Length: 193
Image (tube, rainbow, N blue to C red; front, side, top):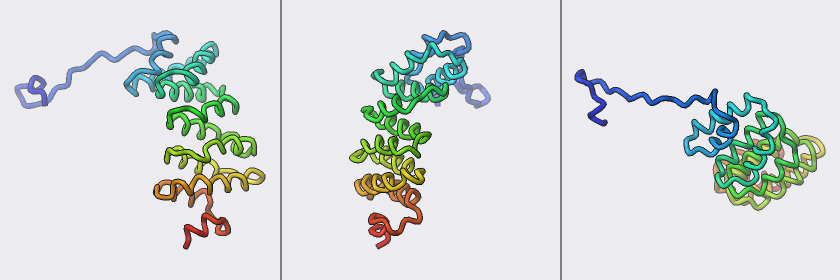
């Protein structure tokens, strides 16, 4: 405890700093704030950008997603685009190869809106050799949502990815949920043995 903050009565006082006023901040400044080191600032900037609904921001947000040096800025720009409801399958697929696992994981989550399409499952096969266990786990959970025509391809990909990460408890759980009731699959038979 900083003794300068203790009053005569032994109470600790906390100096109050002036909070930033996001309501008057320009969109250009809000875009820059997506790269702020403090998560609260990034969250507030993202919320204000979504609330603005300003379509003139879209090229800037896309540019941040695809090329900003700060992965957290890329991630917040991506979720801002989601909040503005302007994402398309092709743009999200471009992020599958992002160098940061948090961005790749978010891209997989965002692909869920198209997961019933075989083309989406085929596109997600780029993650077949994914090294990051959290990205692989998200992939397995997302693929577990497939039905009908896309399901056989998804089950093959789930088994392929899960085999590489079976020492990870989260992956075992994700695989169990995603392949629930599929006792005839080779990976499930191995896990049950």
